[in-house]
Length: 588
Image (cartoon, rainbow, N blue to C red; front, side, top):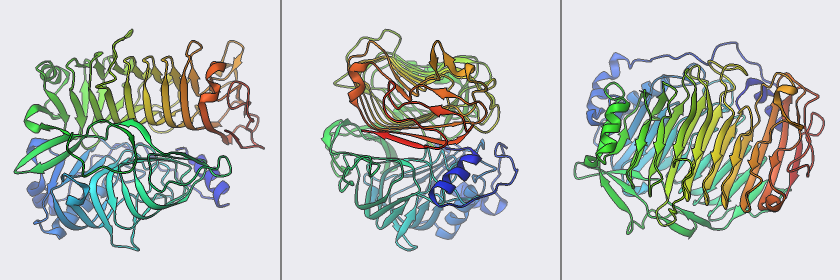
């Protein structure tokens, strides 16, 4: 939900107001250097082992100096001029108490280093706000995890974001506000909020395995899985989907610091779970940083990283942008490949960024993958085509993995993420064909599909998938499950015929293959804006008739665009239609 006219539409729908915009570009790549005044504290906080843009804080430091450094970093990561900045930062906090106002901008990764979120306490704020324009529709690519916030202002911490900005293992001793002006969705997991969560204008949100006293608000599609005190369902009168227990999940691995060493802790698989489980570490696996190859963007390339992978090393990407001349190949079971500081991978030669063999227990975490100018067929692949192995006892997990085609630079691909292996879990993914930025247009940032799932028993918690030129999601595997789906069809088909295939008008956002016998999805929100052409779409969801009833709580919405455009049905010709005079349709 990112285009400027969408903001006008959204605000007029919700509040009945109008907003104007300046003509300044949002696509400049500024490299902001830290001022001389903070270089001393920056040098003191920098952890060379973890890269030039990783800063590790200790509670014994001068908080005024730390605050100045954080403010200087944030000043170079604001909307709109730094939305596609090349800067990446990780801010790590050793156990203790800090009195700080931590403002979180683009490509800033805030992490506590305690065994529990309660080991790192920020008295003040860890906040994401509207920088300019009075909205947060473009507050992307930032994260905070594994810490406690004691809000200093009005007992409320603000985390006003849209996509790709997760909160994990965060304890707010007060209230949490998720909006400022218009806002367009987000993800929260393993969090505890002592007070009320105010979602306000958030049109969609997924909360998983968390607890709060009360949730206030909800626009189109709010979903709660394994959440204590979640709102009760009353669809469609209330836009709420509540599932009491999370059937199976493993929480995202987290870094700790103790005795002068960094240790990665990997939580165990849990079944039928609710709420947070910070204090149960009995079955967690630990990995010393000594077992990681520490990659740095100014030193490493695909060859050096693959050499480490072949030796059985895990990979930790320090903050930066990595140009990859060949695919990173993950061949050893149990390998962890993760980034800090919004690590970005760019496959430069038409290759994939990452290829995972059909193996057990791989973890891919905190990576942003960008298509390059040379066309790639696939940006990331999990399991080789035709993968058959059963990984039920030790599945692969993808946490906070994001994709972009266009936006920061020109790029194209055929598809972003392909999952061939069985028993794979994805916990939060935003797959985005850019609707604004550099190299954007129907004939520029070409990409047919965001996600293709060929494996069986694949589960996704929080799938955001937008603007691709054919089906956004194609599901070929059996027994798939999706808990929360947010999707926009492409804004820019130039003609009706350019977005028609055979006798079918338009491409459904969510396509389940005809041979699939079992598939379930909950909390499905699909939206459309067609700028130019009077595009006709036959259905938002296309499935075999046998699995229609496996889709629960569906909403489609006509946001703006050509007044003659129409989505004719929700699923397989059934359910209401949406157009300029009837913007919303729902179905149980």
